[in-house]
Image: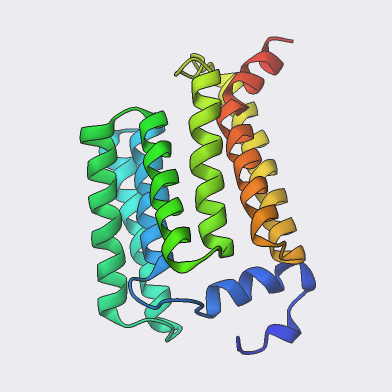
Length: 206
């Protein structure tokens, strides 16, 4: 049980409990794996600043998240290192072999489906499947590309993206929906995020 969770505001209690406790398998660390995948993927895809700067920021954030798992005592060092290694291998496969987002999302969907078939339907597995399926479908519908970004459109896209992510994360932590609902929400949320640049550019032109 997360220490002092009851003393925190209800709005942030779920996030704190999620970060300060461990659920499911301890090896590898899910937080470490996700940190490298998310921040490493953003460092590759976002065109803000220099490539080395983005990589340095992503590596620093991933290391901090990995260190937090050790400080909180919910993982051993080997769990964190294994998470980093697994995520690094997936990123390498995605960026050098699969290359296109629809293939990456497709791989994520296949891996999630295999996990569900072997270990059962959990919230995390359902979310991964929803992200993979939703991402692959919307990327195809978008024609396999995002619109060229303008400064105003990029700012609006970022604002919309933050709003969607915070709303979805807050609702998930507060309600704790069933796995099927989690998967559906993940699919819709991923589709919205991928379509966000289009919405941002259109709003910027008005």
